[in-house]
Length: 177
Image (cartoon, rainbow, N blue to C red; front, side, top):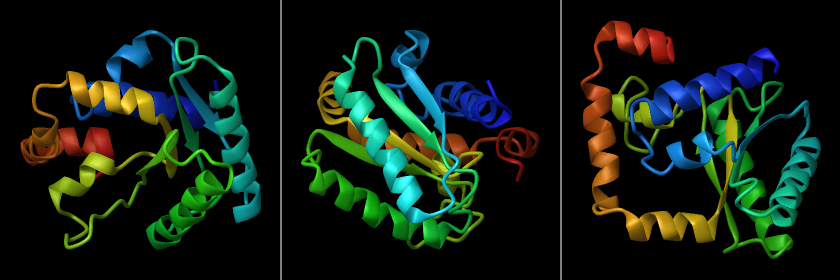
C-alpha cells in the first residue's frame, strides 16, 4: 500500500468512521468492500478514463465483494475550484454511459468549501480529505442505507456540531488545521 492510499484509509478510519460522519461507512469498510484507487492522471481525459474504468469495475463486481471506490487524485485538481469544475465532467460521464441513477460521485477535497461559508468554517471539515477524492457510490446501496437510518435528515447538522466540538489539537491531528 502506498502512502497516498494509506492516508486515504487513515482518513476513512479516523475521520469518516471514527467521527461517525457517515453512519453507513463502517459496514463496507469492515467487510473489505472499499477500494482505494490512486490515480496517476495528470489531465482531465486521463482522470475521466480512470473514472470510467473504476465505474466499470463496480459494474462488474457484486456489491458483496466491492461496495464502493475512492479515487484519490494526487497529481491534479489541487485547486478546489478546478476540482469542483471537474465534477461536472464526472456527472456527464455517468450520463454518457447510462450510469446516472446507478452510481453517484460524492466529493471530498483538502480545501472543500460549501457555498455561503468561509474557508475556516467548521462545516467544511465534513468534506475535507487528505487528497482530492471521487467517491463512487452505488445508488441502490445509498437508498437502502437511507431507508434504514432513523434520522437521515439530521446527519448533516449532527456532523457540523461534531466538527465545531473538536478541540484545536483534534483539528490539527485530523485535518492539519
